[in-house]
Length: 197
Image 1 (tube, rainbow, N blue to C red):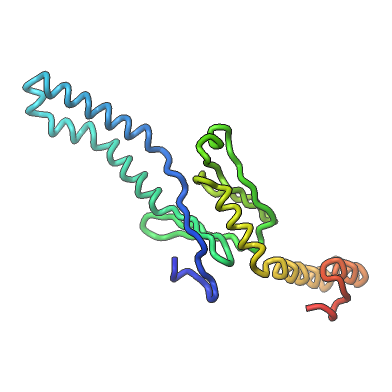
Image 2 (cartoon, rainbow, N blue to C red):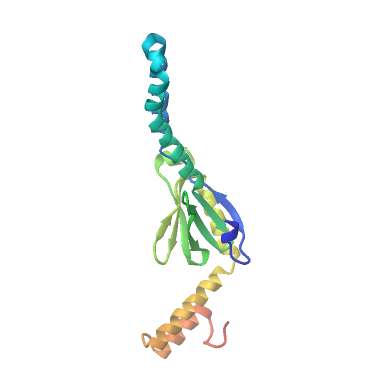
């Protein structure tokens, strides 16, 4: 992740989503191992063939557990002072990110059982879409960190500057009049164009 950071960017926190999909395969491994032990202690012929039977019976569920463990381990969520970065991928690291300047609001989504286990997902709303960070432990802490980073930086100023660029482009393309441009600028910056920034 350090190589993917921009100038003046640093990691505030890194979290991993909760692991999922392990209960079924692990239960199957435990049940099959128990049955193999009982069969090997009861029948001599089974005891002789038990290593081969164990490989055939336990191999697939153990492989599923290993793959899911690896997938869980490489999934990471980084909160930096500029953006939220999602990292995943087995062979090639794939990263996508959300600029903190584009985040309009955040909230925690939880089911009733999630509340009991203090789990949930952090939902980020941008102008384009909603992003849901996977189920996490104590999601309200991550949400507070994201909100703190949003308010600690100059993201409100950057968002206003982006809006000013959009207004200028709309005026140049003729979608809004000069008077409408002046009015929107005043609402955005509290002064006439040219007196701000």
